[in-house]
Picture 1: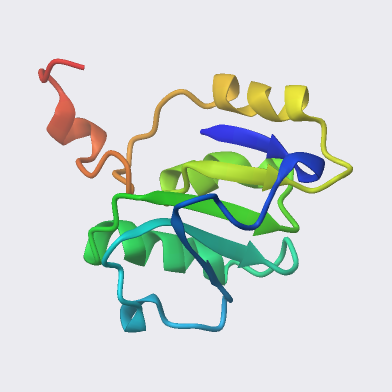
Picture 2: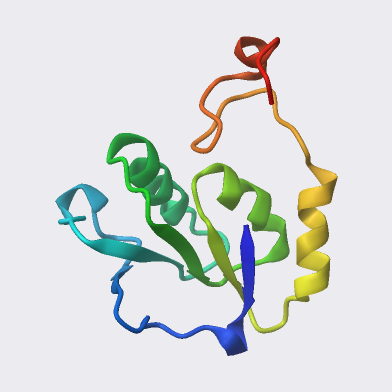
Length: 129
């Protein structure tokens, strides 16, 4: 997962079709044709609706572009964000990007499947990694 400091985040992307989706909107209503990036907002770290949006976009709608987490994004949320399909997280201004990167070293594998690795661990045994 790519991490971006809040100060380095820009809402638009030159030449790309970017959608900023409020966490109250239904992703199933979107026309995803030509969309390169979708920004999903976490207005408060306790509001997890963007996790559901990301999972829905990846698994049910087959969105293959960039999913970016914005808003009140804390270090503790990053691993779950990655597992639900986010590619990029824009960290809240008071979060340390070096500490954030270490989160991924702490949690290297999971038993359950997720939006990125669909099969659970027992179904992956014996497969080439």
